[in-house]
Image (cartoon, rainbow, N blue to C red; front, side, top):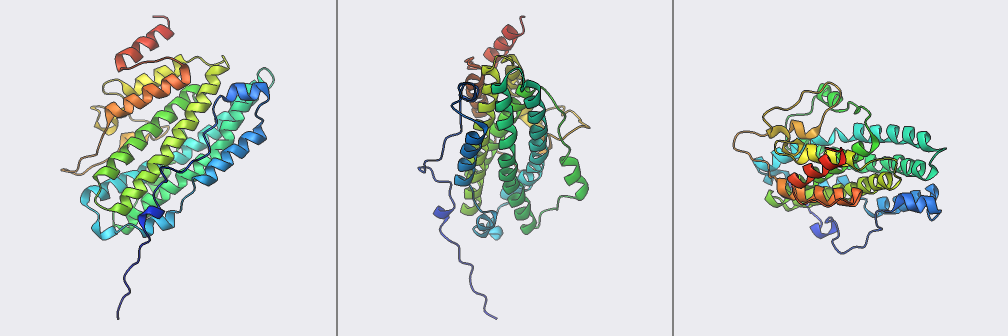
Length: 315
């Protein structure tokens, strides 16, 4: 029986448009709520506009990937990405819970800050839905490639909801996690052999950068309120960027064992002879820029970041 060849639409239809004008990620949140320029209803509309403008189809993306052409390295990238993305839902669940808790904490004493918190919790539903695309597309692609399936026990382990922490520390950590993920996806897109997979990786990286901008904006709102000190953001940035820090992930000499939750960067696995593209210095540069946008403090190296942290804690 003759089998009709698979027809793939032009990849240009799937690429994240580089020239398209998206609605901006809202900024200056604390002052906007305090002045009455924004309300929670108007902010939710802005979030919805950006969410809809950036939507894409998992089903369509998968149709444009030639599974048989994927290299050993490509398969490793996809398998690791699917596992890593399993940890985003518990991250979003934690943000939803913590943001509502903090909203009610500040509702009487600082309504503008309470609104920032509620806007963050509201946006977490969009983040959760967008990350669901990432998780599903990579795990389905791994299945189509015949890669080892994620066992139910691993799935459940990776779904552990993160414990509560200071809200500014939490938002900073999430912004940095998005930076790390975006850089890995971009690096993998440049190294992979299939144009369809490269387009998918670039799309996901673009999503992660948008998420980073949201987390940075919410974090800046907390700092602008005067109720949260920028030192908390700086401490998290140093934890990641220092030599042997969290940015180095599973390549560190000692990876901390955690019973409470799973950090995706601790669980990247590679076969012998398969390298993971990396960009530590690029990630550090982006983290320094994020810290400036959140705290107003400008640093250009890990050493300067450490100095800023020591100054902030009074050492």
